[in-house]
Length: 145
Image 1 (cartoon, helix red, strand yellow):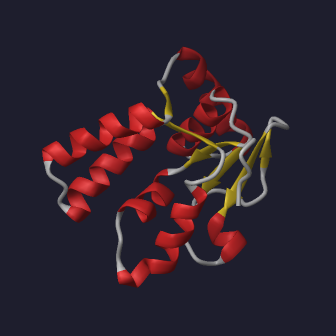
Image 2 (cartoon, rainbow, N blue to C red):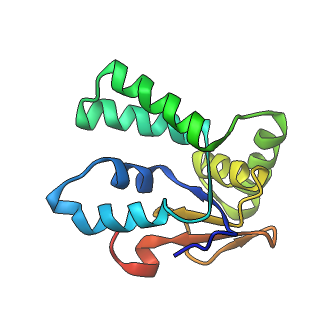
């Protein structure tokens, strides 16, 4: 579990596990909720977009529920907006680490937001980027997500 001094970037699927309660993924729900309760959390516009698309398509959130969620995320957390620096760094990270386009934007945004931990279920566990950001792949670490 993160401590209160950590700055944590949380990838989309973990947010979704926290928002969508289901008996079939109850363990994932609980662990995602625990991850979101510690440290200083940041996310990016990309993550908000992905959360909203998935909640609309898979859970049939209404337009007003989506709008309220967006307002809540912006109010409660630091949201990283894309800029030229993030996009350029993402291109370099994509080349250096063979990330997908979208994963490179996640990593670049996390670095830009001064995160020291990136929780994901899609990226290489324990990979440290630029000596500052450690990727924790919850699938590899706990075998639950």
